[in-house]
Length: 163
Image (cartoon, one colour):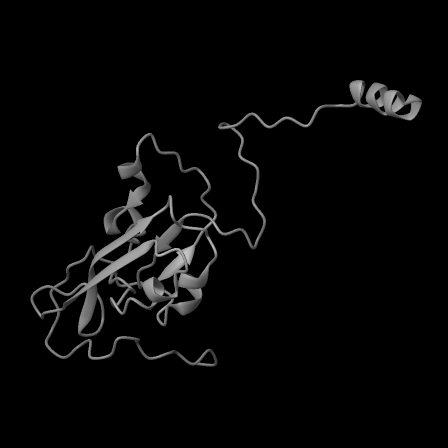
């Protein structure tokens, strides 16, 4: 009992470790799995091709994907299909990262955002507009007008790093 009291008195005089949240945010670990983000290519097209492999890999059944066909007038992703509907229910999500592993185009990424609060159940369902990352400076917002046959592959050619 005396040893416990000594520990208590030592801690009373030590400097407290307090973070003034939300002004100061603590850095997260490198392997932290936070809120999902749908990525884009440099030209602004979405990486998601609507294959729904992420939904199939999700053990909590938190992801819903509905695919549609790209046209030359409205192009959302390179290839013939895109995800017209993409929703994640964060009340169901267990942040396991299986969706990230299953994606063939690396479209879905679990980032480091940890600030998610909901006041009702409908706010916990993030749709595609909430998940898509913003358009970079060089890209254009989707849909894009493209020349017929320009994007004929769902995954673009990989560049050789030695070039």
